[in-house]
Image 1 (cartoon, rainbow, N blue to C red):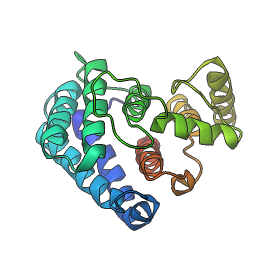
Image 2: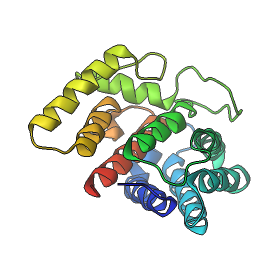
Image 3: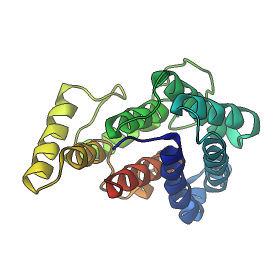
Length: 219
C-alpha cells in the first residue's frame, strides 16, 4: 500500500499524540531544562501542520518544508536537530511521488541518526557519535533484538530482524506487516521508550514506535 504525503502527516500525527500524552514523563527525564516533552510536542505539531499544508505535494517536498519550518520556528536544540534529520530524509526520497512501508522505516533511521542522544549539534551533515538511533538499537539489543554501534543496521542486525520477519510470517502476517514487525523489533519498538534513559532517546522511541504501529495498523 503506497504511503502518500497525507499518510505521512497522519503517521507524524500519531507521533504527536504519543509524545503529547507522555510529555510530563519526558520533562522529568530532561535533566537540563525540564521541558523536552513540551518542546517536542510543539515541534511535532509544527511538523504535522507543515506536512498537511503540503499534502498534495511529493513526500520530499513536504519533508523539506517541515524541515524549514522547524529550522525557523522549532523549539530548542531538538527542533533544530529534527530539522536536520527531516532535510536528510527529504533528500533520500527526492523524485518519489509515494513511498512504501520500508521507505518509512528508512526515513525513521535517517531522522533518528541525526539526533544527538545528549546535547545538540544542529549542523547539517554532521555524523554525531551517540545518537538516538544508536540508543534505540542498543536497547533492542539488550532485549535480544538487533543492535548496532554505528547507528545503522548491519548484517547481524538484519539476521535478527530476518528472524522476526520469519516468525511474523509463520504467524500469518502478510509480507508488509511482517517487514514492519521486524523493523519494530530492530528499532526497539516492543518495549517502553520511557525506559531508555535520556529524554531525547525516549521521545525518539515514542516517535518511532507510534509511527510503525500506526503504519502496521493501516495494513
